[in-house]
Image 1 (cartoon, rainbow, N blue to C red):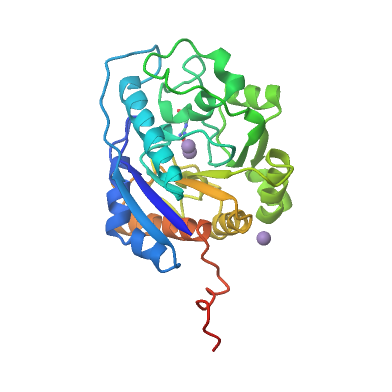
Image 2: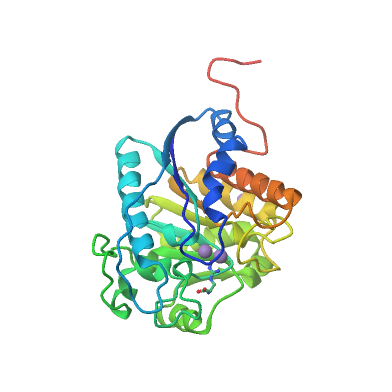
Length: 301
Ligand code: DIR
Ligand code: MN
Ligand code: MN
Ligand code: MN
């Protein structure tokens, strides 16, 4: 199993500095080693660098940064896939998400605003609306974003962990019948069933390439406090790990983003807690199992 890591030190999708430090902070804390010990062949593709343009659109903060960065990220991810590797993208904030085939969006928030519905103007609250073809008509022309044609259907997106949804986001979820399992559903059915119900909806024939966009704020702030928009009452780390283990078992999890870790929020204990939560989530997605790893081929006792 081969993995390519892309760092996206990006903080312009929201207003708090610090989230851009996460790729280097996670690497310095030993991310690559954590993956290598799983027996993976890991290649570091470095951090995305991009050019800023001076485009602007009403109520879409820092579009010149967002468009430059997401274009570069998309090209880099393409290169990683062409090298035959699965992609692990480390944000940065959640404005960096890419298109793929079927997406599990694990987040406290729906990230479904357009510039017309957003109360913040922050682009990290908009990526799902930017990625999906059904929402394309609700956007004005976005200069600098021409490179990305939204080809993903909203029918191929499932939310898990929602608990802070804006009014217009709710309207859009209901209008399009978007697959959305909020925290109430996690309580009612349990995380295992929620994952499988979500997969049955977005990937009924079990043949799609799966992409997880994991916003660390899907976890409860007691488990992952160092993030810009924490919402209490979230997933436990155990539920997050279980979700990722279940997705790994499909053998079709080809891309994962881990976003919104902000190492400048909270004290050292908060940051360490958040980083270790991120590591557990990433490792589970790439095959760590709590039953213990298998012995390498050929060794029997
Ligand atoms: C809010 C918050 N819905 C917005 N979104 C966040 O700004 O659009 N997304 N925090 O992660
Ligand atoms: Mn998000
Ligand atoms: Mn979020
Ligand atoms: Mn299970």
